[in-house]
Length: 362
Image (cartoon, rainbow, N blue to C red):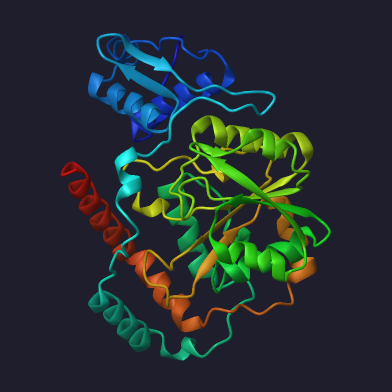
C-alpha cells in the first residue's frame, strides 16, 4: 500500500489518518484485517513513528481501528449494506459519558470586556438591521472556525444565523417541507420533538442502541429526513460509531433524503480531534449542520447557526429570504469579536484540558 503526504501541509498525522480512513471505508482494509505497522508506514512516508502513532490513535478514537498489545492495529469498522447493526466503538472514551452535564463557565469578565469593546468600537453599527442570514463578518468567522475545528469547508453564504436550535429547526421544516416524514432519536432533547409536533409534521421516534440509531428502525421508518445528534445524543450520551455515521449517510444517499445533524457538545471533546461530522463525511450535499453557543458560552446567548448544503442555498433564498434575522446585531458583533480574537477557542481549550484532568483521576 503506497501513500504520499505533503510535508508542507500540516498536520501530517491528519493526512495519514485520512488516507487510512479512506482505504478502510473503501474496503481496501476489510473488517478484522491488520493495518500496516506504524514503523513501516513511518519509513515509507519519511516521517517519525510518533506521527504515524498519532494517526493510528485517531483511527482508534473514531472507531475505525483497535490496538492490540504486541499485535498491531486491526480494522473494526464494518459498513453494512442492509443497515444491520454494525461493529465499532464509540469515538469518545467511555468514562467521559459519566462526567455529567455540568455547565462549563464562560468567563464573565471576558464577555463583559468584549461587550465594552464592541460598544466603544462599533457603536454606530449596533442599532443597524442585520442581513436576514446574519452579519457577513460573523458568518465568515464561523466559516473559518468550522474549517479549523470541524473539518467543514464551506462558503459563508451557506451559513444562516438564528436565535437557537428550536428556531432553526422551524426554518428547516419550512425549507424541506411539512409534507415530509421526519425521524428523531429516542430518547432525545425534548424540545426537538416539540418543534416537529408544533409544526404539524409527521415524525417517527427511532430507538438508540449503544452506538447509534437502530439500523432496522431507520430503514423501515419511511422517513425523508433524519434528525440526529451523532457526536453525543442528549440525554443518553450515546456517540454514533464510525460505522453508524456511514450508515446514516448511506441511508440518505440511497433515497435522496436529508440529514439534520445537531453537533451538540462536540466542542468539549477530550479527544485531539472530535469525531467527524456527517456534513464533512457526506459526498452528496445532503446534510444540514446545526449548532449553537448555548452550552459553550451561555443559555442566555441565543445565537445558533445552521450550514446548508450548497444545493439548498438558492431554495432557502426563494422560500425564506423574507425572514428577518432573529439575533440582535449587538450579540452578533460580540460573538464575531470572540471568534476573531481567538478568545472563544482559548476558552474551549481550557475546558477541554480541565476535562482531561478530570478523566485522568477516574
